[in-house]
Length: 111
Image (tube, rainbow, N blue to C red; front, top):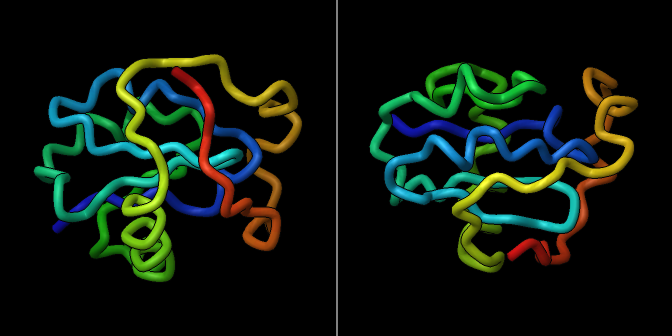
């Protein structure tokens, strides 16, 4: 099992989850985070820390749809290991459905 970042992270990109990850398996896109499923140790500490409630175990149906996206982009985007500010309009986007098409394939730039 692994944990997966899902649609509600798009356009929010809260990084509270990154700060608690003991193995630094998060990767950052321009407007989304992903978890590398090969690096995740299934500890689950990230799930309750996500303000957008966008992280789920891959055993849940919603997560299965996003597993390939997490796998693909974790190979392309830079690793992120510390908490950063969310996107400026994150609160406005939090909880809005239908954000999948807004996912940017560009890497993130937080350091």
